[in-house]
Amino acid sequence: MTTPPVAPPLAPAPAVRLQHVGKRYGAGPVVLDDISLDIAPSEFVCLLGASGCGKSTLLNLIAGLDAPTAGTIETPAEGSAFMFQDSALMPWLTARRNIELALRLRGVPRAERGERALELLDIVSLTDAADKRPHELSGGMRQRVALARALAQDRPVLLMDEPFAALDAITRDLLHEELARVWRATGRTIVFVTHNVREAARLGQRVILLSSRPGRIAGQWRTAGADHVVLEQQITEQLRKEIRRNAA
Ligand SMILES: Nc1ncnc2c1ncn2[C@@H]1O[C@H](COP(=O)(O)OP(=O)(O)OP(=O)(O)O)[C@@H](O)[C@H]1O
Ligand SMILES: [Mg+2]
Image (cartoon, rainbow, N blue to C red; front, top):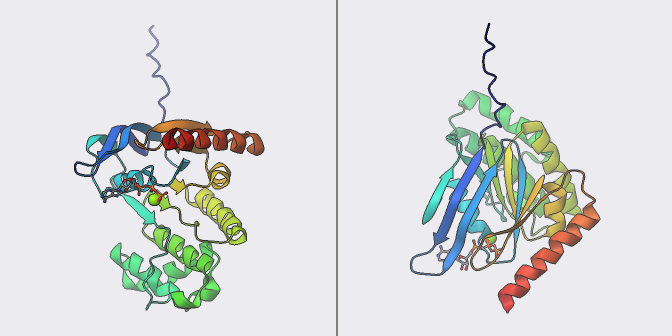
């Protein structure tokens, strides 16, 4: 009797796979060079780097808003939701209507939109502000609405480009907790861009440091079980090295 061969356990296919990705704008300098990166389903990755190193460019490429000039990018067929530094809400629509609009664009039937929008506002702790327009909300509340709207798009991948950069430290801390909770509840794959070491180490399961000119992966850290004080020191030191190298 022969035993059937046992298949080796397969690692789950990555949600996002970048292979040797490069980007330059026209005849300009190389912005991103040879970036290879696998992001697992439901992984929370923070992309860290100095201003101008290519973080937004990389996020745009993953979103499919722009094409790489070298290499390949694989993303889920259902696409990505995007959240920007600025909430980019429609100023004439209430919080709830802003979310309903995203639901409508996704093809959710009218009868379901109202209730679904309220559920999403509840997820970001904003039910009380459902009928307020963006100018009546604080910056933190606007970013919460923007997060709810990004969730309304119901994509497996959520791309966030410095969404909390304009907020004060206390509001930002609150939104970190909120985002971590939303991430655990929804199982989204998140790629979060920041130039704040503490934010990256706090939120991400993995922190990826990009160098500048050209943007390359200059370091990676897993945060699970790490002493955060030590981790943040290590990352800061490496980030400073990158900035000094670039200034030289
Ligand atoms: N559409 C474009 N056309 C030409 N050059 C561009 C374009 N977009 C970005 N760049 C250049 O690419 C480089 C990387 O820009 P990018 O916006 O990706 O940096 P970043 O890391 O997001 O910076 P920041 O932290 O300031 O947001 C910069 O030198 C920028 O001038
Ligand atoms: Mg940017």
